[in-house]
Length: 440
Image (tube, rainbow, N blue to C red):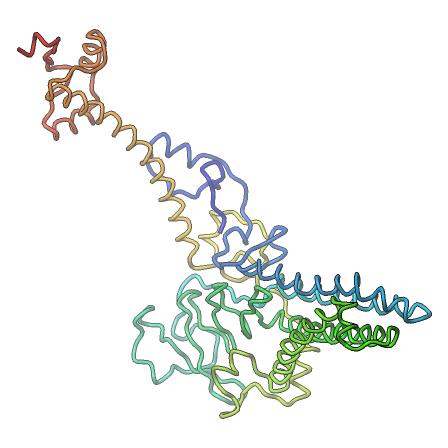
């Protein structure tokens, strides 16, 4: 969420009322129009005016890219030099080129997965009515009452999916009934359509709109690991044949090949196993969240339409457009009066709270400045009174003392001074203390 200073606030963000001069200066300051991503209530990070949306943990994306790029650079710099001389007719150059192209392809898929809207469901402005959610369904008979949300909104609801009853939950953050297969990500703070999981390596939720790119990224990474692993072994074997030495001697002649063999072996097992697991999920039309939570192996999966149709649904179906236009410019006044600002979908219900927080924060800042000025004046009066009671002469000339003693006090100072048992300095004469002779 973007924070605004007093000079950056849009017009009309405060309600009209009587305010002090400093408060009025804050309200009357003109500001630019805001974009949807600047008012976003999730934990996402945006780039290029909302064209790219990332998760809150963007550093993990940089780490993952380095784990892919650095081994390929080592392979091209140290291992490929031996392969270029060993294979004729530019075959060695082709081996290096394939590694580079595959690395660029993998990094591109990683970036697309991390910067794509996974399928965020727009938040509602108000809780739904009992029969105003758009589903042909019936209330769950198990609902005893809601303690966290409005009393008229049950926590769950039964909907019909492919002839099977599926229970959907009410999201108190987004103020809506989550569609089937939708779940709220606690890291990104969004409800995501066909939520699979939040990937820490990508730093983004994996949902309906980026699952295809995620799977292609995982399986292409596994193939790249196998490719580098295989040609590192080829390089070691060529060294053994050329020098008539054993394996350990060949590894000493090309230590980078040995390091890459160990690294790609472990990485291939990890991403290869992950590729096999997601291939199983695609064939059975499951998500990672559903596989661990609902265990469709025990009960019937209402979304399973057969292996071939399930695969076609992931790879051949059209990716739906995003339900948000994050780069659209909006006026802050219209955000609270119109129910939709992007593609006909409602904005976050917590938007009025943001308006209230900004307003109260600015008022507190102005009040704090006035309070500091008032406190400094009170400390001056109290300090002078304490000096008089203690019988100590301040380090000022008598003329300055008389001048300060005759200062006129504001009504606020007079009232606060009366509470401390003091009198107004302008009407009460103060006893002047001279030197040691006066104390005798």
